[in-house]
Image (cartoon, rainbow over all chains, first blue to last red; front, side):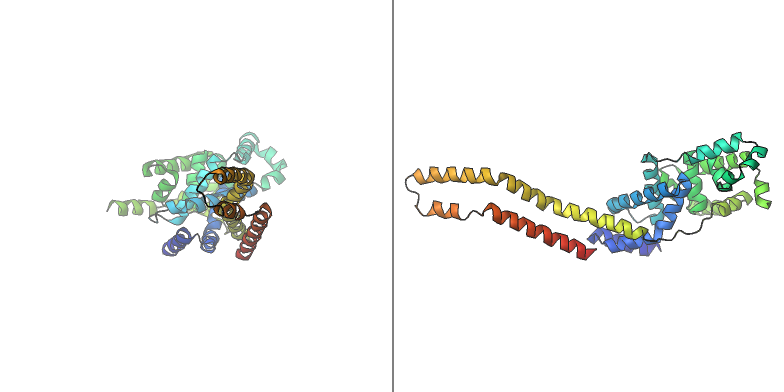
Length: 182
Length: 122
């Protein structure tokens, strides 16, 4: 896969081949869009950001060295695009507010509203933006700690401690065993 | 060796890791024209970049046409009043200048050709 990606990248860089770039988008759009959808919690904003991300990738493709995975490189651009955008979703803040302030009895009365919020949304809501991005890269995109380190420009040790901290936050905020068995 | 140890440590997942992986798991998103839309945007961008220079040169030429003609006429007058300059040289230079109409027609043809090429590429 990496070899094929590198071949396509070489074609794009050498002759500005838009078809080859289209093929790269088709291969990786799902990962990038899923990453941004989880990061923003907003499907349409995420898809707009994904478009911007691929446009930037086109402009910066000559900087891809081919040493790391192409998806890792793309997610780095996606994360930067997200950080630079003013379209950060308020959804997680709202979910956190609901989870934190609405009692269980009250939440039952608001069941229609809560139906749209998944367990994952609640997990992600308790994390900071950085923790959320790193946890998504690790657990949803399957990136190694080294790849995450390259994507976020953080040392590998810091990536590990962010993941550990994120897991701790989730563990202390929710009863994991309940989710596991029920 | 160190990287092997790191990889092994990464692979040693606990219960919570496996739970998180299953929770983060997502269904693949269908392309549904997403890639085509971006490729179209990129082609448009390339096309704009490609025609920017010729259009700028053309517009600059149009703006500069009259002053250049005026300068050449002035030069013609100066040259024709100078002794020793062949009499037929200066009129032939002035006559070889293209007219404004010709330049505009050429610009329109260039624009139509570039637009058609872009359409064909799409």
